Amino acid sequence: MRISGSCDVRHGHGLAGIAGYVVVRVGALARPAGEGGDSEARTDLVVLEGAGQYVRAREKVHCLRARHAGPGVQFRVDVVYGDGCRMPW
Image (tube, rainbow, N blue to C red):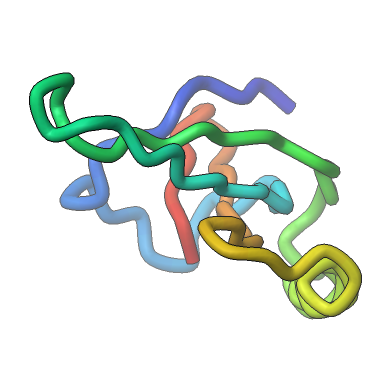
C-alpha cells in the first residue's frame, strides 16, 4: 500500500477503492497568535490493510484514547485508498 500525505477532503472517493486504514494520533501544539496560532502534529500509529479493517481500526482508537487521554491529544482513523489518497473518517 502506498501512503501519501493527507488529501483534500473535497476529493471524495466514497466506499470504492479502500485499501486500508491508519490510526492517527493528533496533538494540537499551541503557539502564540503572532506565530500563526495553533498547529497540528500528526503521528501515524498503525496501518491496517484492507477495507474490512475499519472496525478493528476504531477499536484501536478507543483503546489508545482510554490509555493516553490528555489535553490537545486525540486519536482518529484515516482511510487510505488504492491510489494513495488519504482522508479522515
